[in-house]
Structure formats: C-alpha cells, structure tokens
Image (cartoon, helix red, strand yellow):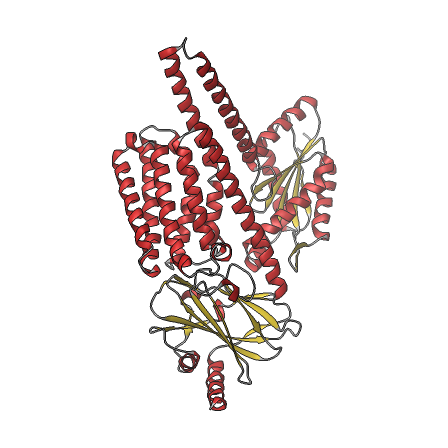
Amino acid sequence: MFAMACAVLGVFLAFAAHAQPLLTLDPHTRMAELAPHTRYYHDVDGRDGLAAAVDALAEGRFRPLPGGSSALGFQPEGAYWFHVRLLNRNAQEPRWLLVQEYALSDLVDVYTRQPDGRIAHLAGGDHRPFSARSIRYRHPNFWLDLPPATPVDVFVRVRSQSSMQVPLVLYTPTAFTELARDAQLGMGLYYGILLALFFYNLVLWLTLRDASYFWYLLHIGAFGLVLFTLNGLAFEYLWPDSAWFPDHAVPLSICVSQITMLQFTRTFLGLGQRWRTGDRAALALMAYFALLGLAATRLPYHQVTPLASASVFITIGLIFTASLATLRGGYRPARLFLLAWAMFLLGTAMFAAIAFGLLPKNFVTEYGVQIGSALEMLLLSVALGYRYAALRNENERIVRDAKHQLEQQVYLRTAELRSALQQLEDAHSRLRDTSRRDALTGLFNRSHFRDVFEQLLAEARGENKPLSLMMVDLDHFKTINDRHGHLVGDHCLRWAARILGQTLRPYNAVPARFGGEEFVVALPQRTLDQAAAIAELLCHRLREGPCPHGEMLIEVTASIGVHQVDPQAEAIDAALHAADEALYQAKNEGRDCVRLWRRPQTAPA
C-alpha cells in the first residue's frame, strides 16, 4: 500500500511539475527568496494532510501568491499550504537551510519529497518547543536535503492565529551564518541603545522626579518587549517552552506600550491645561487599552491581536492631533515633540500595516520601527529643554516668595539649570556638526560646502592665490541602481566617497556631496593644470579598483569637470556653473574622463 501511495504521489507531482517551473539553485546561488516561485492553497478546514495537498496541487488549486507578496494579513481560518519545486545544481551544497522570516507563526510543518518517494517531515513554530528548531535562531528554520541535479518538492503547511506572513528564504550554511551574524549584531546594537536610554532616563527621573521621565521609562520597557516578542527573541530567551506567552505577550505588550505612550503625551504636552478635549480622548483610549489588555489574557489571539494592532492607528492619529493642537496654542516644545515622534510613529504604522497585508514586507517596512525609535533619542534633548523651563519658572517663584530664606535652594536649582543648559549646548553642538555632514557618505553636505567655499573665495581674493573647482559625477549610476538595487547603489556611493577623500586628502581639498551621485571639490591654491592632474589621478583611482560588494565587483568610473575660479570676478554660483559645463562636456565626450573649462579669450581690438 505504501509503495502504491508513493507511486500515486509521484504521478501527481510529475503532473504538477509541468504546471510549476523549477527554482534552480546554481553554484553561484547563496540565498534565494521563494515567494516568486511559490504557489499556495488555503485549506479552510485545516484538516488536509500531505496527500490532500498533493491532490490540490494536481487539480490546479494552488495559485501564485497575490502580487508576489507572502504577507496575507490576519487569516485565522484553517491552514495554508505553500509549494515550491527545487533543483539543486550546486554539488558542493547538498544541505540548505529554509528560514521562515516571521517569528509568530504557531505551527509550521515542512515536507520534502525526493523523486524516489522518500518523504521527510520537519516541524516548527512558537507552539512547539524552541529546541525543535534545526538551529537556535529567532525565526523558524529547517534543514533541507537537496541532492545535486535532483528535483525536490517542498510543501510548507502553516497554521496560525497571528498574521499570515510566510516569507520563505533558502540559504546555504555559509550565507546563513553571515546573515545571522549581521542580524544579531544589528539587534544587539539596537537593544543596547534601548537599554542605555532606559537607564539614562531612569537616573534622570530619580534625580529630577519629573513624571514625564517616569512614563517615558515605562514606554521604553513596554515597547522594547513588543519588539522583543515580534522579532522572536522573547520566544528564544524568555519562554522557549511555552505556548501561552507567545500568543498573549504581543497583544498585552502592545496595550501597555500604547497606555504609557498616551500618558507620556498627556504629561509632556500638558493636555489637561492646553487641550481638554484631547486629554479626555487620551484617557478614554487608555481605558480602552487597559480593558483590551485584560481581555487579551482570555480571548483568542486571532481576535484580540488584530484589534490591538488596528487601534495603534487611533493612537497615532490622536498623538499627532494633540501635538498640532498644542503647537497652534503657542506651546513651542510641541514642535520638537512632533518632530521627535514623527519617524517613530510612521515606523509603527508601517509595521501594523504589514500585519494586515496593507504594505509589502521589506527592509524599510519591517525595520521602520527600530529606525524610528532610534531617532526618538532626540526626544531627550526636548525633555531637557522642558525641564530647563520648568526649573527656571520654579526658581522665579522661589526668589519672589522667600528670597532671603531659600538662598541655598536657589543656588542648587541654579546649578541644575546650568547643568541642563550645558547638556543642551552639547546636544546642539552635536546636532550642528551632524547638520554639516551628508548622512550617507560622511562628506560635507551641499549647504556647508557653500559656506566653506565663500571663505576660500575671500581668502583667494585677499591673498591673490589660485582657487580651482571640480564637479565629479559617477558614470551610469542609474544602471547600478536598476541592476543591483538601491542598497548596493548606496554602498557604491560610500565607496566612491571614501576613494575621493583618500585621493584628495594630501591636497588640502574640500570635498562634498553635491546631490545624488554628484560631488563637488574645492582645491585651494591650485591652478587649472594642477587641478586637472589631480582630477586625472582621481579618475585613475576609481577606474583601477572596482567597488567590492559581497562576491561582486562593480565598476565605478567618473566624469570630471575642472574650472579655475577668478576670485575677483566670479561668485560661487558662476564658478559652479562653469565647472558643471566642463562636466557635461566630459559626459558628452565619452565619460570616464576630465574636461577643463577655460574662459573664452576676448579678440584683440
């Protein structure tokens, strides 16, 4: 009977192979996203086994993922089957690791069938012990045996009360080791920053006894638990053998984080005095989240979690409205508060939208919360400014009411003010330096370059010394972005900026990112011919060393326009225009070259 079943299964899979193309893993493949090659089938009753799924495949009931996205939103009914057919042509890699890059799926079953009828079954998900996973990692993962030159059918069954997100990625052992190393480093840095921020604000609260810091502390802790759970780290480190906590920690931590966020907003913005309607709305929403949190301990996950996730949008809308209302009322700290929370709230909204299948899952949408909450550290400067104003007002009251009796207290308060002001000045100094730099390349930005160039012009004009200008544009950069993606393009920009800085450093040059893939360089005390020689050297340096990225070597060349400025007659815009004209000449004459802009000679009378 077993032999007959295997034969029938083989017939069905052979038929299905004609309808679904193979995903070929060649020797150059280190990782492969399976979504473009995956078909899925919804088992509404959740009772189908492997044989029933094979029947569904043979009958054509498996269909491509909608829009190529593996994020299907909240789908609590039944189970979902996913199928992909793999052909491994890399004889050096017979074992591959299949990773479902979503941590909250309850039950995940992976079946592989070899052409000889052998079937292997692996199980995972957060309703099974963490030790059941193939390797210790925060996402469900499964070792697959893929013999070389042998087609293998892979069926994945997922049943979960959480959002149905099944981003399946196949890795070689080496590629996964690199991924895990980089991911763990990034997570460690993020949670390290979060922990440092928590203890720093704890010290401030114990010192200043300001209620804003207290609620901010609770919000950091609750939101950190939300991300710790959503990233799968809580299941790995806090409750690896529990099925109850993975289902209830998410809605509970969401509710607590929303309550603390709303209370912090009420305290910081002073809604009770500045916008009573918003204050009452915030209190009502906090009561709602408190009741929802209690219900989360009783109700099924698939009922309470979508409700809690959807309610996040209400919190975001209320906080933005409250910030705008108090800002219009003349409360100036609300402007910085709104700026500090904008990216954080945007990241939270994107993460919630993924859960409902409203946005695709990519780096920005998945990690927008971490990026936004890192920017939230600017809120500390705002809180210090708020504390400074509060202490100043309190000192004025103390001096007015009991100047002679409270001189010592006034002295202590003044010292606190001085310390807070110094911290603010230090923060402003750091922000001012950051504002001069381009975030991607680390070079000066365009605005700061103009200021520096004005100074160089004045010096050249007063000392009668030469001053030259270069415009540098990376060739065919759009092709790099289109072929390799914008992240690789950003890597190439950073590499080119590093080469540019290393090459120009001996010449006291002032390089800056002008915009996009274009750079501008000021060369003080350099004539046109000297600047041209330096430009040729820069072209050679870029040309001789392709930009390395992983196993790729990407050719990056540049077109350069050079112009010697006349300090007595030219302003910065005219000088930039002349250098830009030379740049366009270089691009029109074949790129990867240097062209000079020479001032037209006037004909003799």
